[in-house]
Image (cartoon, rainbow, N blue to C red; front, top):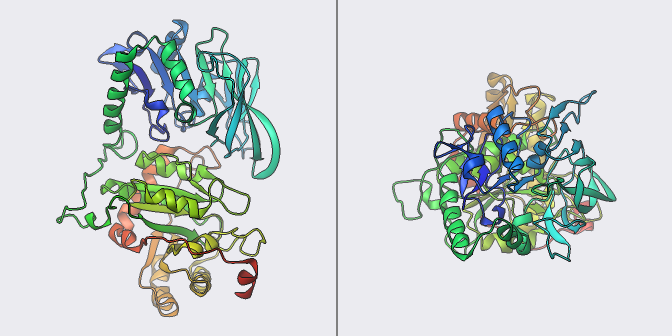
Length: 506
């Protein structure tokens, strides 16, 4: 039996395991062994990503998906895959007017902006080939920007959410739909097939898989994952090096994790928003993965959307502990996160901070900042400033003052990075001053690069393929990756700073 997984620019095929069901990758030609997918496949899964923004689904793929639906074959669309199955998507979140993209019209629904990053326990409200005999709620997580669903398609799931559009709110939103014929399902629930074994069992029953078929599906899925993990991103032409801990000729072998040990960790922090944390983290993740290291990606706070560009390059999973809890925001606290990392396969973990490293530092709901997370667990930091707004000299002053304060609370700043540098001559003038004031020798610079007006940030029509490609190219050209890896440290949870302790530093 053949279960397809669309493998196109902008999709995130490693983001989840999809119940270990996919057996074949569906590329832009819409063929398997030279034959159309509607004739070859028994079922199709369309993963999340930036399918709409990246214009990855061409007319040929559209035609094949519609033919599969017409023949009654099961199709499951997840997040962006759900959106593409609908009538239309308004992706103009920060636009003065809607920006409408047409879907396949296989589900009678429309999508518009609504941000949600909650882990959820969703209510099953309709019968389908996935939900037969399921009487309890199912689990998964949201990670979307365009998640407001309206329309006439039969609702399959409702998700109670606690946050929406950056604010605390209790709401219940549509998170799954079913077509009239019952074979096309769309859902906003990532990990639907990974966390709910009864759903997978129902799916396999629906396609008529016997024990031998199921054994063969899982075997082919293992082969498929090996194939996926041979390249950075999708159709990048950049292979992932094979690396072992005893490879004495490879300088990166020293960073390979020994089973049961803690991986190296480093926080990518900044002195303010719009410094380029996501861009830098994405490029570093891709560069480290290219060299053969298994790279984990975490986010301080709830907005895990920021990690997806990195996961696009590394083919990594969105782990259940990907969002480090600060106050009431996020998924898992740092102590539990570190326990899970110790048992993980990751060699090095990049932790992207939230806003400024000190944003939330004086909130009584401790911990509430990236600084407190790092201080709690001996996590070193690469400190970033985007200099395009305040100027290089002002950035130097701010980076020095932030570094001194971070040192004061026990955080080891291993490197300082000036991002979006518009004049290298001025940067070279301030290096000695920053080194003298901070005692740090790793003073790095990334020149100002041009991102497309739309598609350059997670907020505005981002394209994982373009954003990831540019981030990787810039990091490879301007940063010594071995130096970055050496900045990592094995974390160990000690304690959270109290509110009174935080106040004493000011």
